[in-house]
Structures are given as C-alpha cells and as structure tokens.
Image 1 (spheres, rainbow, N blue to C red):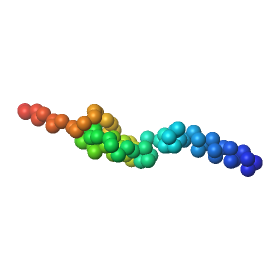
Image 2 (image 1 turned 60 degrees about the vertical axis):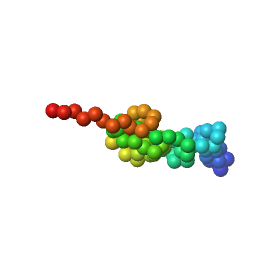
Image 3 (image 1 turned 90 degrees about the vertical axis):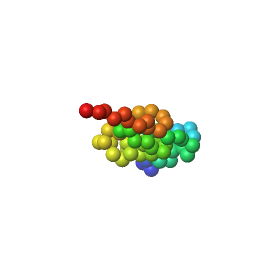
Image 4 (image 1 turned 90 degrees about the horizontal axis):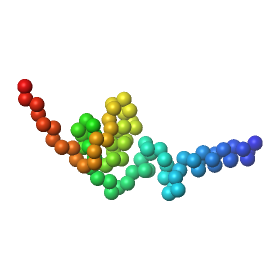
Length: 81
C-alpha cells in the first residue's frame, strides 16, 4: 500500500512540472521571468510584466481582466458630446 501512495505522489509531482522543473500552473509566481516587458490589459491598464497581469487574472477572476497587447497602453481618445 505504501508503494502505491509513493507512486501516486511521484506521478502527480512529475505531471505538475515541465522539463525545466517549473510548475505548469499559470498562477504560480515561480513561472515569472524577470526580463518581461510592459503589457496592456483590456481595461487599458499597463502592467510591468505579463506575470503581474497574470497574477491579477488569477487572484481576481471575476474582474474579466485579460491581455490586450504587448507594450504600454496607449492613451484613450476622449469622445466629445
């Protein structure tokens, strides 16, 4: 029985990491790369890295935040009435 639990634990451990030893969970901050650049969200908010945006998406899934494009957000044009 102990062997079964050990093998099950080993299988879960192996399946939750990639070849580089990083977790495949997109919400795991260990996946963050320090050299990422600015990104813009669909709410026209600039984030320092894709990792920062992903953190908001993971921690607040009901906000509907997503990536709009790479780079800083462009100023919104005002609509005059």
